[in-house]
Amino acid sequence: MDLQQYFPCSVEILKDLKKEIKNYDCLCLLSAEDCAEVAPELKDCGKFDAAFEKEISCFWSKSLGVRTVYSPLGVLSDYDDVRKYAVTAGKALCRARKAGSDRPVLVLPRNSGFQQAELVTLLGALEELYQPIQYREEAAKVEKISCLGVFFSSGKSSCFDLAKQIEVSRYVARDVGGGDPERMAPPRVVQYVQELLKKIPTKISFNVINDPALLVKEYPLFSAVNRAANCVPRHRGQIIFLEYIPPQKARKTVMLVGKGVTYDTGGADIKAGGVMAGMSRDKCGAAAVAGFMAFVAQRAPADVHVVAAMCMVRNSVGEECYVSDEVITSRAGVRVRIGNTDAEGRMAMADSLCRMKELAVANKYPDPHLYTIATLTGHAFLAVGEGYTIVMDNGPARAAGHGLRLKETGEEVGEPFEISTIRPEDFKFHSGKVKGEDVVQANNLPSSRTPRGHQGPAAFMILSTGLDKHGIKSDFPLKYSHLDIAGSAGEYPEMPTGAPVLALAKLHLNL
Image (cartoon, rainbow, N blue to C red; front, side, top):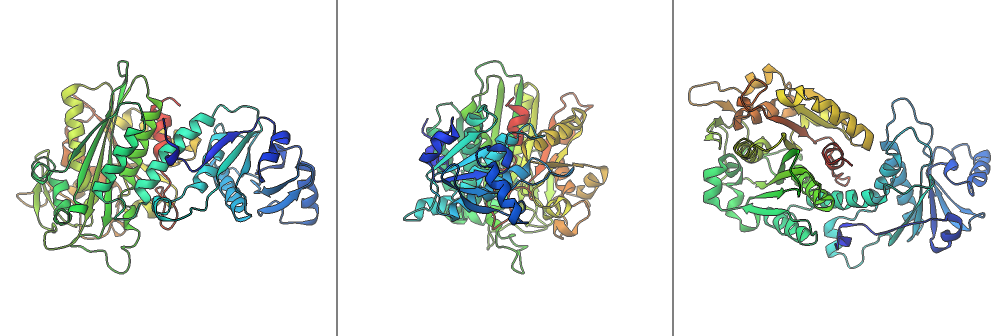
């Protein structure tokens, strides 16, 4: 399969570092113990430079005859995690590029207390080499490394193929998530995903719903957000449904719904005070879904059924935009009163989540688990900080121990999670307040100024989709988890991360 355009450069494994280094122009090291040939030189440098083990250095290695970048990993504390390897490797590649390297070699760590240190180190280097899609498509000459050499100091290269598959998947997620509001407007996201699927032989069904009348009828909450953008053909909302059916009888079903708000003005409750910049990143949930499906297509799992929805819509402002106080009946027949048009993400996803619920029940899918993935609330970012995803389970998912397992999995592969609990207060907050409304979409304050501002939206999605009828004691319990990636998706101007593609893949696809 031809996936080179979704990969930052060619990658080669070196079997004999000393013999093959002559074909490269830079050696990148994180620790002296990983390269015996250079270790004495590193020790000598440390004798006259007290900062040598704290800062990145570039020097000429006489023993190997090559420019060398030393990005010291340092001593790991009790509170460090495997992400330190990715960050350190990324810094090494960045320094190598600044030094003029076109063909660097990265030496992967030999000894580590982390099981996935080699994989995470390699992924950190590849992430640093990513170039934004607009730059790749429009620049006359993209400044990039042409080839990355990889030397496994442990002598084992078992994670190499997996790393390439993961990077292709995260490349897709970064493209969709980081593309500007025009390059990744909803119709162009459809084109991008179509082109991707043509290059992967694994069959994934692809269906797009964009007919305005059909959206109004079957996806009314999504349609409300889409109303203003629908007036502009290049901004019209699109719901992309993807499905992978395994060759063997499925043992589980993973059902993903991603928030794909290609630009969030806030709508009628417009984002004021200069806080609108960066809102093209509000589609990173749908981007993660695209990345996960790219990984599924490459791996073709034998017994995992995957259904996904990318809810691509622009929250525009204008004479057609939806406004607070409207009462809109959701796909599930729930009357939703709008409280704040800037709470559009939950609106964009709810009807597709309802459809997932309907499919799971009607088809009796084996062991279904429903997810929503979204850069949903500023409150989530404030609560846990940059780099962390919050997982919130409904009753059946919590009873299955899902949140803890996902947290442990994310810790292992460098995509950390924090667990939040959905409480009775969250449902009460979103319950209807007057006759004629069943659910209140939001209050009129930002989530960052609302107590329990990231838990409440999960309760809203349970209420507005009818998932509250599928709890532990129901006839058909359904596991549902909401993942708020506001902290982990990548804060502008940094590149999108692709989180939580790797953690979900590790949990569900037996990597």
